Length: 337
Image (cartoon, rainbow, N blue to C red; front, top):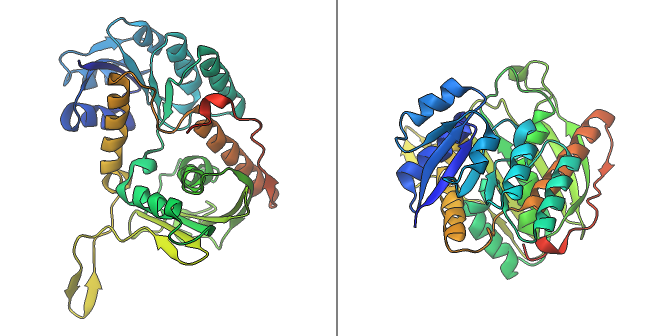
């Protein structure tokens, strides 16, 4: 059986997912597309002979030819389309953020709980990266003892002029926050954001930032974002435990030694670094739906928690002080994930 997927939002990330499904994955087909820019949706559909173009995301969701939905539209529209998918009883994969406000995420959680089973998966693709999965296996095994500190580095060569200082938290560090919760298996309870000396390449942007968070058990989480660092897209991660450390290894398959120097390639952007993670993320989502089980990836609670941590981070950046993170009670529907 082929899973017929409708994609709402045919911009860069939507097109990335469409290419994954049509060129690299099995068990699914693109049955429909929709975008606020209908001309763009039609252009994308030109390479998808069996895909119908819908004027509105709601119409796509309600189509009898769509079994599951992928939402890659603007963040402000996510709540509307995820709620509509839940109402239609259709599995929905939503790129982060789940919604742009914590209250909106809570409305999604309430709707899913009322439905009675999981339908929503949030696109935190780092959980599907091979290196991160091995790192979590090491942490969970107890091989390095109880975690004490987790360091996460997120470096971009450059960002566009439209990138704001808050985006370093809500668009960039949000992935690091999710990784910290996932690796440690516990929630984050406080955050302080500290601007460093400004990188001259970033103009008036506050870059880099150092974020210090605490987990429920007292693990310190240090997140660095440097988004104008020029040399490449570099993702760092290290867990310091009671008896050892574990860190993400260099991505290079070979070391080059020439002219008195040692070198290796650094990824150019997020697509190069996480191309395998995107494939695995969507294939596991497709396989779960096809087998009739609920998706086991990042859920609505994970999307909500990330949004709350981001909100606290933005508040801390403005106030210059530590801000507490309060999530409230997690519904039982999400206890096993």
